[in-house]
Image (cartoon, rainbow, N blue to C red; front, top):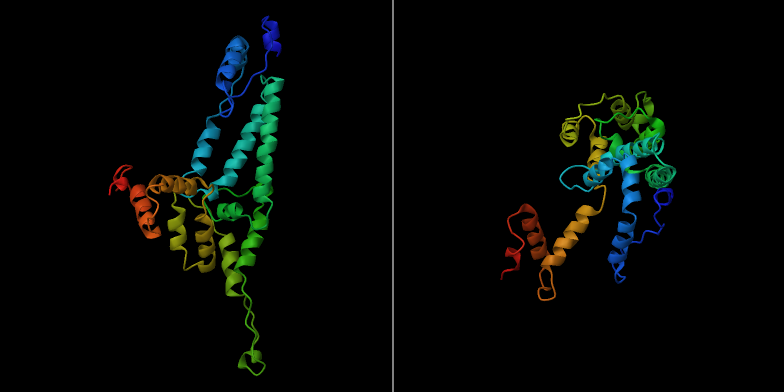
Length: 269
């Protein structure tokens, strides 16, 4: 470590806090205290604003509003932030390498999420007209539009050979084709628009696409909400209280979530 060497401090390796290893916390703090001066010097010379990462992580774990539709845009914000931090003029080589590794890791997950033709997050994003989707290379708008068009297309029923319909030529486009082409020409909406109420108002104008939007926008971006349910359920169902009916457990989970029953009340007989 150049900072430690320039200060005449013996270089020691930082150790990690391991929950399964005895005294690991002590050794971690001991080594950190030995390197207190170089660590402070590095921190003073770097401007690392990591609040954006915390804010976006908390947003995609929420359960009171839509989350899947914001994932792609959040990925892009984080990637752009990391690129800017990596190329900052005062960033030392070691920190820049860490930014690059984080960028590559995040970009790998981003590609996995968006390189599928029927990406759930991509469809949820394009169904939210509040966002600016002019960056086709970033979120592959053209491919997702084609996917939505494919989902809307329905097989046409075969006509009977002796049907009177054979006497007439069908000139107009199918109803489904008119629907998705008209929707792609829709203008964006204000950022304060409730997108669920928007699709509720558009359900008769775009019946098929509104159902697609309802299905995809309802998907949570992470498993945090489900994990919370299992965590609360584990508090209710214990070794001494393990014969609750599924319906009773469901009601208790609802009451806990609504605040009607507290943490202690549902344990009372």
